[in-house]
Structure formats: C-alpha cells, structure tokens
Length: 356
Image (tube, rainbow, N blue to C red; front, side, top):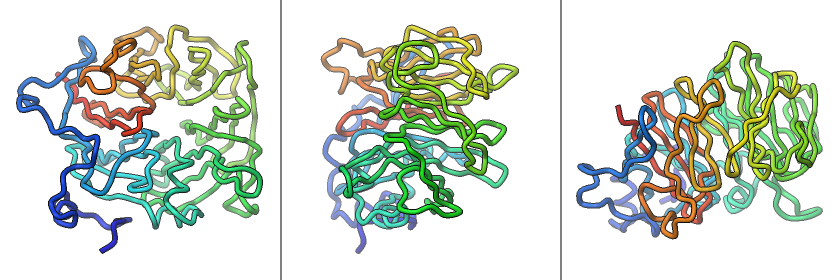
C-alpha cells in the first residue's frame, strides 16, 4: 500500500493500522497525564494561549524536518510544510486529525523527480483569498549548483497543489512560466489590489512587485542597513490594519521591520525585534515569529501587545512546553488559535488555543 496519500484522505486510525500500531514518530512526546487540566500557557492579557499537546502528531513512519511554514484555510484546515520527504506537506483539521499528506505526487506535480528534492528546497507558504477562490504561493530555496541547480522558484497552486503559475528558475518560459533573476526567494504576500510582493531573502536582498497577472512592476532593495536596504529580507506581509494598506518587510538580520506603501515607498521602521521571520494578521494584530526564541504581537500602531513564549537563553527551550526556541512561521485559525512551526530538526509544530 502506498505510503503517500496525495490527495487521498484517511483517518488517524487508518494510519496506525497501516503502521501495525506503531508508536508516533520519533521526537513526538506523549502528552502529560494532566496536560488537559493544566496546559502550559504563553502570552498575557488578551494575548494568552494554552498549549494543545495532542495536536499535530504524525503516525509511525513519518516525521517532520526543519519547520518551514504553516497556513490556515477558510475551513480552518492547517497546512504544515517542513524539510521532510515523508510527508512534504501535512494537512490537519483544527483539532489535530490528519486529513492528507503530500509527497510523491506533489513532488512530480511541481517538476521534481522525488520528494527529497522538495525537502531540500522547501521554505515559505502563503495562502491567498482571491476572487477565484483560495490559492497557495510556495517559495523554494536553491539547492545544488550549475546544471544541477534546483529550486529558486515561486509557484502558485490551487488548494490541491496543482501548479497555476511559476516564477524564477524555470527551464523555459510560457504563458504560465517566466524567468526571474532572483537567487533564493523566501516569502510572498498578495495585496487587496491583487499585486504580488516577493522577497529574495536569502539572495539579492531585493523586494519584487508584480501585478495579479505576474507582470513585473518594480524592484527595490539590496544589501545594507539604510532604509530600503535589507540584511535577510526574510518575510513580507500586506497589512490592512490602517486606512491605507502597507507592506511589512521582516528585515531579519537587521533586527527590524521596514514598512512601505503599496508602491514600495519607504514609510517607517519598527525596531526591537530578534530576527523577525514573517507575519500573520488576525483580529487587529500582527503576529511576528522571531527566530530569537519568541513570538511578538503588535497592534495597528506598531505597539507591542505581548511577547509570547520567550525562550532566549533557556537551555531547555527546545523541549519546554511554554517556551520557543526558533519560531520560523505561524498562523491563526478563525477562532484565534495560534499554530507555530520552528526551525528545529523536528519542526516542532504546535497549537496554542486562545484563552478567552
């Protein structure tokens, strides 16, 4: 029986039966006996969350790699990507039931020969709600050299993983495939106008703007510390918290967020971050996973609402339930529950339920 279930949906019971009742994948700890009664909590005030230790487990024979991205769709399905070949993508319901895994067929659909190539290039994932429905934008890092170079692409898919358009390191151009001279893209955001913003965060340190048909409009940036320059422009988001939408750039190694208008004209800087990675907007706030061992929530005025799970300097921050070690991406469900993946070998995907 195939280990790869794209796009077949099966229950957790099916997985366990196929694995002969095997234990959960290595690195997944069983919940504490009193976890349901006394869950670990992070944050404060209206930004308080309690850990759901049972969420996000994989069956025997599957495991996470470095945690890349996590998004929530309109049905509150939680889509997790990591640098793993089994699975490349895992899709859960909000309560933790594993609905789908994508590996072999997904790899083939995006032009790779094997899932290991997906695992070696996986990075960002952005869910866009557009007039035609919901779509996923995937960013790949580069792997290999010269003729064997793979990755360095951004591709848009439907919710089943079918490719609609590809940008970047493509073999040849077509109506749905175009070459773009970036080296290592890391994130995508789509504005209410339909314009698409892409950051070349591990490469040229440039920010690209395209229209909804992927016609290039503008490029800014380059390596540096001046406003409009970046040192690892790792994440991008279009904030709609103010009257006019704004583009937020996570300038990771400079420890700041740079804010621009939709034309990519510089507006202001938000300092005081520890290696910000990306963003997610929910209920009047923007949540920022920081590789420096915490998550920060800010309001529409860029003021800090709360720091969550600050594990900086803690030797046990990779295992302690109320701490983060290296948050790389996050999302929130419609109910306000928080889902985080970390740049750790086991991905450490976790759900933190909003405390009312």
